[in-house]
Amino acid sequence: MATVTRRGFLSLAGIGTAGVLVGSELGFDLAQATQIKQQLRIAGATEAHSVCPYCAVGCSIIAYTRKAADGSVKVLQIEGDPDSPVNEGRLCPKGATAMQLATSDRRVEQPLYRAPGATAWQKMSWDDMLDKLAHRIKDSRDRTFVATDKKGNLVNRTDGIAFAGGATFSNEEGYLAAKVMRSLGLVYLEQQARV
Ligand code: SF4
Image 1: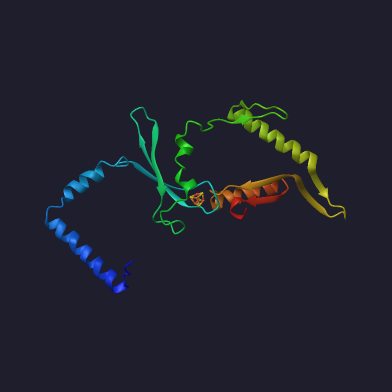
Image 2 (image 1 turned 45 degrees about the vertical axis):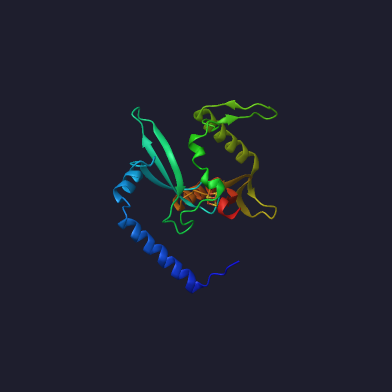
């Protein structure tokens, strides 16, 4: 197998560049290239910057969307953000499928509840689900609240509830969540970035 030295490689690269320049002289049509670009399915789309929600790496993503005549918004493409120092435009296979979070026909679009011992899930409205969560939190806190420890020290803690923040929490959301949870007496606080 022939070996290519660094000097030889650079020479070949120089020949390649010259080839492109000669190609333009031979009729390479820049206007046509621009036209092809304009035909991309993301041409004219709205570009939104966000963070992949799947894991604590926190890769930056760009979502391209377009508004239809009926006012609905269609997600056209999701890809890595090349300006991100975290992922420099790359996404792992899981992050690369993030578009399915919005477009998959298997997406769960409303809260589902499975009662203790039941095998089936039932649909529930957001209002009912939030009420249920609030009652569960209150009940658990009332049941497990510890005012003083075995040595009589004042601790005011809720041992029966734990909280885990998500990978896409901003600093402010994380701060607010920690404040709310600590005000309930929670001591078991975690963040997906450390799991
Ligand atoms: S793209 Fe992959 S590595 Fe990056 S945040 Fe998403 S799941 Fe994690």
